[in-house]
Image 1 (cartoon, rainbow, N blue to C red):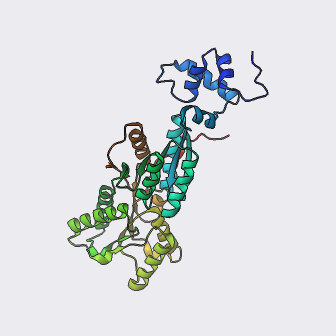
Image 2: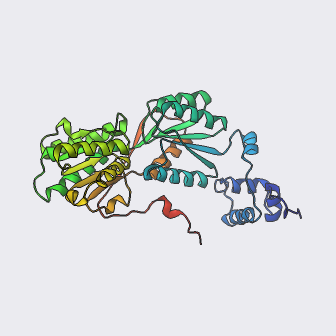
Image 3: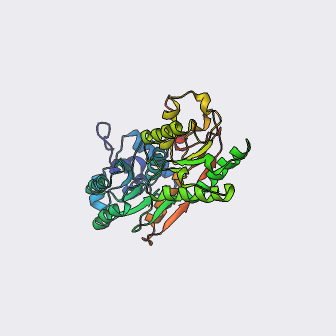
Length: 352
């Protein structure tokens, strides 16, 4: 029997140990064993032996043999909010379940950086790319197209490749209606009592503002332009916008819609500088989900975007023949105050 006690096991070593053919071992290790109708018991045996003997796939060698590296990329705008970190967690889990290796990078919402990062990923021979929240998705598409790289847009749409995004208009409608209905329990709400803070000149912000204004006009009868306060995706700029409003009015709006958890962070920075009793009666809606935000001392309604469903749909598109550059909408969920939902992190195993 081959002595593998002092070296990492190869497919051929595992073939000898398991009694299965090298091709069967390879199918189990690359995740394609179900398609080949290999018995689950055989697959489990091989996987156990691989773990026991420290088998690791040689992705470079695999790429040379199959013209595929097994690497799948996800380009994010930023890492530091729950929505994109949740998206990355779902992405990594799905990539690994397919027997591939995930690569997650960010470009800090810089279009030039986006293109340079993708060029670097292409140099590592990635097989596929998910482009999430890109500032210039069509510019990234051109880089991918030139290299023949399969790709799909997530979160923000492009015009040249298929896109899967949250239904921002419908989510904004649900959120705005919930804010208004909750506020009206304490008395009539005038159009001047409901504001929107955050967002910038991108598709998601446009759709959320459109949904906000449509519902506000339908339920409150008017929607003054001054009630839209774009601040970009910046906690500092959002905090400054709240401070400016407060200095001019001596109070915050009775109810308001913030465009993302980044803008909610700006609200928290503002509130930290003022007595919280002053704002005990505000009602907030946030187009993002964070369980901590749901337990603030005032009502906070949230929209949870289904990043797992978007990633699943993205793989379905990449697995099929390339389709037209249409945009697929994924319906989000309205989360009432005092609600904590489960998410991708719940799948992680506890370490004793």
